[in-house]
View 1 (spheres, one colour):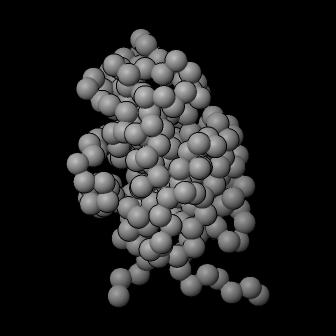
View 2 (cartoon, helix red, strand yellow; view 1 turned 120 degrees about the vertical axis):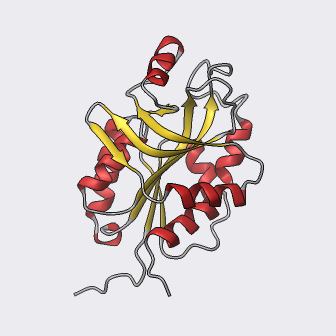
Length: 213
């Protein structure tokens, strides 16, 4: 029988190559256990399939899961580079409550002082959200939208009870709308923020999962 890892692992899931690059080039020191950064591919179907497959393996069976990457801000006054910490993720199949939102907000404030952090529901979509649809989602109470977080967390909790969270970096907003998903111009600050978030994720992992000493 193979030995179980001494510390439960952390799975950080993102969709795009540029998101994966930002996370892989960030500060990976200080992790409290094994960390896997998974590029799922774009869209809810790809995210759900990739996360389900990853969690089915013995190395990640008990992993905490954190969905991250870029998002569309829905609230007026949001700017590229703002952070969104989900209180829950929503899509047509239902909602998933997030774990340890308060500690995660505090850690992000510590590692990125002065950066605006928004909290609230994060909506899932099967496509890039623009124009009137953005306003419609905001009217439901959601503060941001992306294509993978809801599917990622749904796949995670279906695979077993575990801490889950979603942290997104605003890359476009009502007054700063992207022309297409691959455009990061105007969102360079978003890339830099995403590259800096891992220490906060590691501390969240310790707070919600690892045994107290």
